[in-house]
Length: 117
Image 1 (cartoon, rainbow, N blue to C red):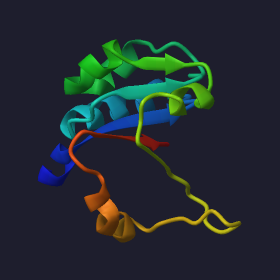
Image 2: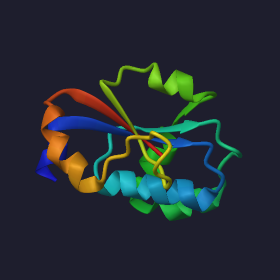
Image 3: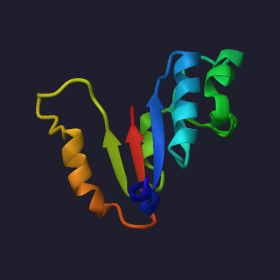
Image 4: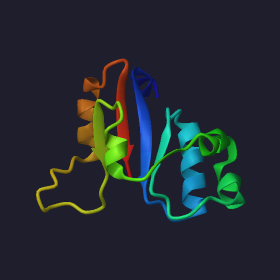
């Protein structure tokens, strides 16, 4: 986890649909000391079920940054934006996890990184 201390990592969920998913990501954010959690155009308001699944990540649920469009999120003050995909090919230039670990040194202290799901 020391490598993560060098930079500020934010997570972004694009059009999340379910309370359980959002709550679970809040819990993950707490476990991995994510700086901020951003949501783009969430499909619904989140019920108590999201809070139940958030567990120790309830603070992230209370402090969600909600944006109407992806364009508004990436126009924030991030130095790097990293997108995730389950599909490769079509010129996506996807990196494998081990390749991302090899370039992690570019994330200097004070760098803001946005990881998009």
